Length: 168
Image 1: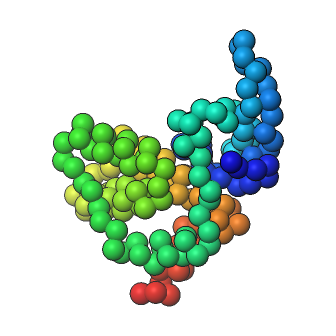
Image 2: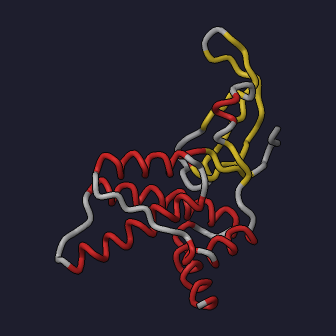
């Protein structure tokens, strides 16, 4: 069970703080809920029923600074996963996003950055759907890293580049 003020990662919502664990009534039943406030999105509140195993499974502790640094140090070892067929690529990227794992977000980002460079060399741009996957993977990864490093998401890319330049 998680506790109040704990920083967690919640599925596609990114880093959240558990504001409270409250008994609430939605509809006819009274249930205990985790009340989550996304850290980097000020406009929403998320209610997760404590007894709903499927939804609680989307919650996990935010990575530690050490885990983030290890992931960054190992980025060069993480493979890409380009698929030519757009439907297969979409299914693959959807599964990677839903996995709720930073390593899989890096796979998407590395794959699409490489594809973006190839297309730019040909005078083309990345397909809109691929650009959307890239932005979403970056948002989720940068939120997670920012939460672990206690910096803003906008500072994460510079942190990664600095860390990688020191290990190269």
